[in-house]
Length: 623
Image (cartoon, rainbow, N blue to C red; front, side):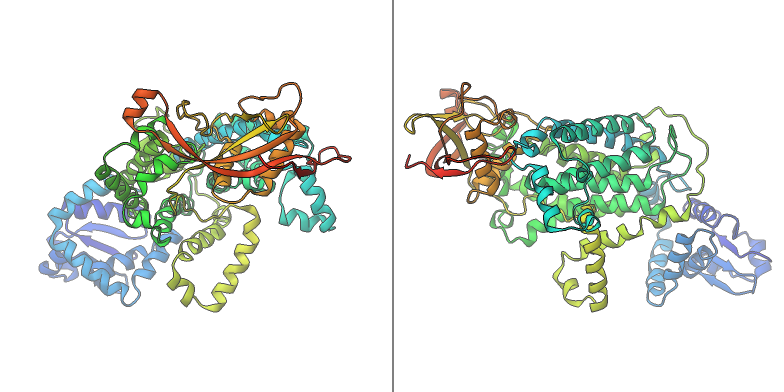
């Protein structure tokens, strides 16, 4: 006998199905035969032993059974991952536990067969993910298109020479502090080092749109997504608070994983090589990190609203850019609000573990988390986050699932993927796993010092790329809604309000659906109201006094069309949603109470001004 021989119960459908799966894994290096009476008689295996567990007979004459037989058979597989997993299964302790589980399953084969069919399906070979990758890359191209189109409408007002955070000004300051070009590129990896003019900022967004369309239509996907990642990174690294949202870094992380997974060629179709098991695992790990990070951060924050299940009673009213659906959801019964808060915690802490489960459980996770995203879309505006979260969730499915809705032709069999391409993703596995472990105090306390030092170095090298990140949305719920109203005046006595396009302002203006567009100034106004005036807000007031057309283009209108005002100020209000009766009676959606001045009146200081530099300001008296 030149090959190991596995004998299994040929009368058991459950056993036949799993034997077929193992046969595929070992690729002809192990023979699988039904345990007929004459084979048992020739090999001297008692019938009672055969009925209890599968038997492995090796060329040396050694006979093993149960879980040990399985692991020893799989260790002959030509697949490196299968061999490693099998050898881990033979370790002391692991093997004893596996034998116990095997015995329970063997005694309950009939029930196990039904569970097996529901969880794993009837397929006996692993599912492929080439169609999943194809669909993911197309939709990722659409997500990048939304991101660059949204940014292109705002880029000059935010980052132009007369914007809030001029990129050219910042990079010039960096050049003065760091003479080494290489050190500057490593600290701030951006293509804008080459040209940060207003024209270059606009051209970059246009290039991003073109590359997004190329990826959307499957033109050179590997090159397209790699360029998209580097281009979006170029804006994020210099974008400061306006490009610091979690969906910005999530898009970078998805883009980098996509660049490592995408097929090569100009028009590759679904690709000749399939995504490796490591690639698929990294995407599922990202799904887990995104949702579990948000859930565990809520529990670890100690926030009272999450602990008492009252978070949703405040969430709809205090969301940065609420929707009309959120307004109505705010008036739902409190019992339902508490139930929805508990549902959010469950979906974000328990369901993410299903990402690593078998096929049917992953489908449950896909639809559950997709439902959560649909609820978020209906009740709040979070840019393109909901789109990209749903797109990322495709990796919880497989080709067989997608072929039910995508009429794609069957391609040729997948070719083996070069090992070195899979190896490029290995550091991301280490960083991703470390990001999860770092959330737990016990791990931080007991991890070996050498491991901690090595991980700190690896994280420091990866940090400028912003492509492995912690996630945790709304870990602390705000319970009040302060809003800033900005006003200008010619004489310091009569004030006119600057109206924003999207943020809460006029009491009779209903909340509107903005997503997937990301109005970055309106979003940051919500954050600014929660604390003292940030530096960018003072620059915002200065640009209003200067009459910057790029900045005024971000607002809903200019109350001073002839010339800029001489004075500006910011007033802080506390906003609350009206109840249903008041809404029907008066037509207003909000009620507010003035809290005081957020920034007292300011005016331009006399003196020369430099082109592209924010003007100097001075206090202009009481209001």
